[in-house]
Image 1: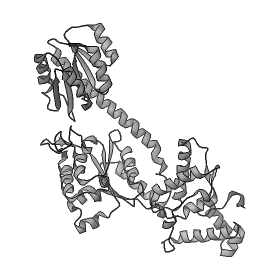
Image 2: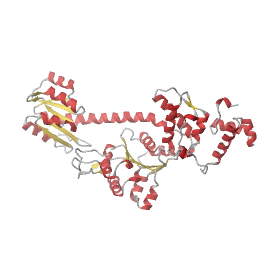
Image 3: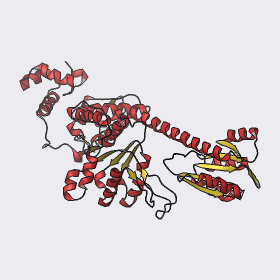
Image 4: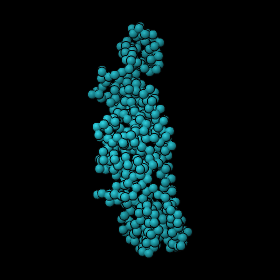
Amino acid sequence: MSSLQNDSSEKIFVLEDDLWYSQFLSYHLSSNPDHQVEVFNSVEEFLGRLTETPSIITLDYHLPAVTGEEVLLKILEKSPNSYIIVISGQEDIRKAVSLMKLGAYDYIVKNEETKDRLWSIVEKIKHNRTLKQEIEVLRKEVKQKYTLGSDLVGSSEAIKKVYQLVEKAAANSINVTVTGETGTGKELIAKAIHLNSKRAKMPFVAVNIAALPSELLESELFGHEKGAFTGATSRRVGKFEEANGGTLFLDEIGEMSFNLQAKLLRVLQEREVTPVGSNKSIPVEVRIITATHRNLLDEVKRGNFREDLFYRLLGIQIHLPPLRDRGHDVLLIANKVLKDFCQQNDMEEKSFSSDAQRKLLGHPYPGNVRELKAVVELAAVLSDSKVVTDADIQLQKAVSASSSEEKTLDEYIHETVQKFLDKYNYNVVYVADKLKVGKSTIYRMIQKGDVLIPEQKKY
């Protein structure tokens, strides 16, 4: 008998009224330690337990007081994702075909070949399910590839450096640490690295450490066994197992408790996890990308974060600049968000007026890209025409730009030219004379988008 390979526990229900044969099936199926086999001799008890969604069910076709078809239909209703193997004492091709049309996965006759046939079918089920999972992962991630562009746009020097590091990180499996303020798009960067790496066909699993109580986080990451604690009614696969072969994104890693940090370090060193309530270790091979808005080195110095874990996770460091430091990337992102929102909501295509663009550029965005996205989507809804005006742009006044904000020399120059253009009705010749600069210099600023004037005023 060939050994079956399995990455996680298989819950198998056996419904069989013949006590000897039920023991026969249970013995052979249980020879694989990853199989959790439960035998039922009562149809009523069996149907009452289907809420536990077993992976595989073996169904005795000839049951007292009920037909195999009736039980099969009830299984399909209560546990539609279970694979059903019908086992019968009689070889009836017509009946087998009929049952498989109804939804049974396969049909086995009770004879000397039953054991080998059963193992072969179980192995085939596992293989098919793995293929389906991989296809589903690919379908979801291909869809993600086409939506990542909404925020991963920009031509500023600050974001170009980020893109270069993303390319380097995607080329290998080194761990990655992504830092930056809230809303800068840290998870988006993690997904971009995963989708452009050799692991793209495997799962991308994200966990927000800050969103989970510390007492639940260990179970979330490493899984737990049935009965491990109150409420653990069944085995749960942890995020490490779920991400096996792919990428695990640990957001807000700085919020992890010191006690759990030690357990995480062991998993990274040993490359295996031990579910809560289990003595059995499970090998895992996962690429780790972490993110935080904290300065982890400062947290190490304060004694809040383990130094050995810090260096284990560090790898390539990617710092995402705040939106206020990305200049005209604000407009590139805003235009893309506006276009996508209009398409997704069957709205006519819209654009920003010059005044609206200036208003967008003048805000510091403490919520970063996330805030800009919310502002643009609201503006699209408020706008009654194809042009979004400054009146449609709703900004939080409490977080408006400070006059003491640090800017580059170029930014001060562009701001000054913009103010003079606004003041003198966008008369480029007059403003150039007033500021003692060549008018060609201002026209170049307009062409590059460093300053903005209405279309009808370009002369």
